[in-house]
Image 1 (cartoon, helix red, strand yellow):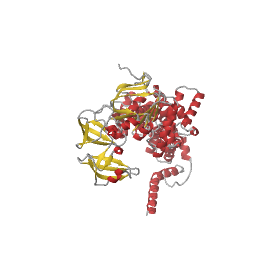
Image 2 (tube, one colour; image 1 turned 60 degrees about the horizontal axis):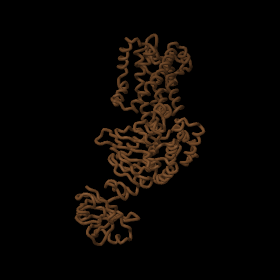
Image 3 (cartoon, one colour; image 1 turned 120 degrees about the horizontal axis):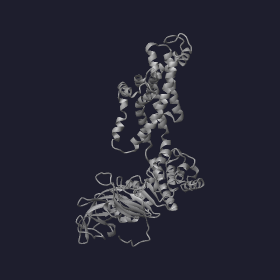
Image 4 (cartoon, one colour; image 1 turned 180 degrees about the vertical axis):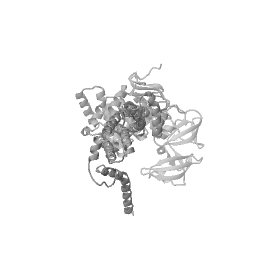
Length: 263
Length: 355
């Protein structure tokens, strides 16, 4: 009986993983198709669509823009999120609870609504289709995540160790630099990686804000798929997955994935 | 200002009317005052919520007192930040720096004091020797057992040669066997280093066996301060009598220098104080059973606990008490369940408190 159950459980886990990974596998296979249209299985094989993507000026420009924006967003998310998280966890001030609740609001709101709102504010400010505009818009999405992750990391650290440092003679600044910060590295890596991935994949807000002068990779892909479906789409999907996977591996290598995102 | 008659007793540390008010129904610490002599090992004992941890946090500078003061060597430190106090604090959780080795943990306070490399190395080695952890200097805290982590925390606190060492329930996370061992070790380290120590605990056994003097707290207030023997033998209140060791508390009356329980006169050598309702406290091991006498009681239950028999008795008026009887003593023969016996104790063993 237990044997049967364990078999069943294994089959179930396998099924779930298949549901997640099968489409990815399909995409991966199709990306090496030599056909002029999307089909499975492909009738011929080649890497011509990879060459096509890499020589496509629009995609490459979009990739460059998305990468730059992702790096800046990750950095600013941390720079703005860490002090906020610290204040929310370690300090007592009126309205702390309210802010803790409200800070997650952007996650609850439909991004369509956010995008529209941002557009209405950014248009008169001249921020549409600019780097600062896109960075600011992405920050609206990433900051709540960063603050949340950092808040959890900080809360898990507890205050005993910091107080011990202070009784040994460390000022608050010394305590933060020598005790809190080193212990916060997993949370910092995790929140920055999340912010970078979110920004790199962001499409809804970007759609409102891009223009002919400045576009991001997901928007470029979206526009392309609107009128054509050829294996180039699969290649682009593979590239996006590779970038995200690279981030995850980076976290795994530096701090350990479970340590960064678990408790 | 009153002149102290005993000028030799140098009050190294003075706590004066120390108060902390969270804004609740009553202050967490309420006008607490006592002195600590240099090199003394003082225990702060009380049930949870009695204000002992709040007191310790005010000492460490982690909480600012609402009123009152703490003076060390004549310097009022009540409102100095923790990093300017030069105190060593050992947390219940040990609070070691997990990203540093044992040696780095111990060296932390010295580095902040800008002590030179050579001296730091020497003092760290000495502190680790004192807690018998010299072989573990390069380990990380996570690689140590609970008892070893605790000793690192102590080494880290004593290496800075603090004015006072504060211990917050340092033994409560250890298993029973290790706790007994550490009790003596802790006291031994303190005796060798001579550091004035304030030890917060809820465990009366720890307080009795380790401390020079004990401060008993209840409801934020000082109940009694004294040596373990004074506290045990001459408790200042029914609370202290019941909290330190076991005690029987009986409703009694004081009239004309005599104490009566259940209307019967009982042995009492200190029947002073006001006439009227009173509480009489007697420890179970002081109660003896006689075949006959004025104060009668019925034996309700006998519980054999090894070295003695806990005998529960009921007075005619319904009050109950416990007598610890040694197996084989004459009392033992009388203590049959259902028997009516008479109770007796030495007058000096009864403490009487006005109700």
